[in-house]
Image (tube, rainbow, N blue to C red):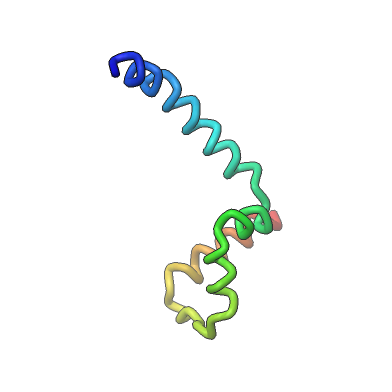
Length: 67
């Protein structure tokens, strides 16, 4: 058991870094393939209010994406 714990202590941070890098390299299509529930929200008829923090966040993302 001590060997198993020691391995996870060494490998846990390495695996977490790999997971973070995978997410950074992912495309929206790739993320939807991994998280199929994201597709469900596309089909819902829910519109965020203009005061929503989500709307403001998306505006910031759009600004930085297009320069």
